[in-house]
Length: 161
Image (cartoon, rainbow, N blue to C red; front, top):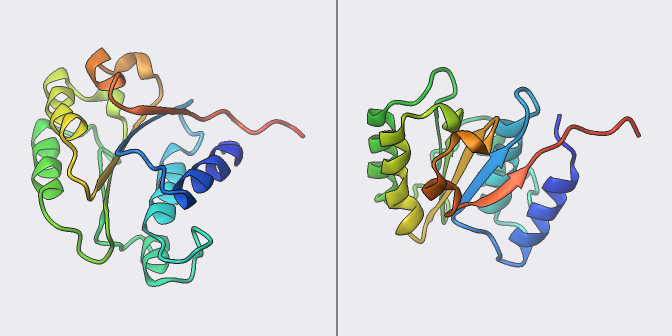
């Protein structure tokens, strides 16, 4: 599991309205990148002052895994170019329940170069209501053009202390 310092830092930024539209989350396989991205999504969608509250409607739906404004691809298999195109299409729609849509791309480093290049459309011209998290074991597996447009978050394991 990742160190909780990253979560606290993200929450502090979100509380001050300093969230980016694109994050590249890297760390070892099994460290909890998806859990971290989902926690960040709850933080961004939470309607209460202390984020995430776990009690507002957005937090509850996210915790139950059924929030319509959180879209995950590549979790069970490497996302295809068709999956990325669907993500891009959805990014042009208005959010259903929240003020933002959160898109999470698991195993982003395994995306083919044409799929990574397609994601650049959202990275370069992001809709105001969209935030994206690319999850990868190694940021070296992402194209330099993708890397240069996202805010990097590196997850380390927790120390023994």
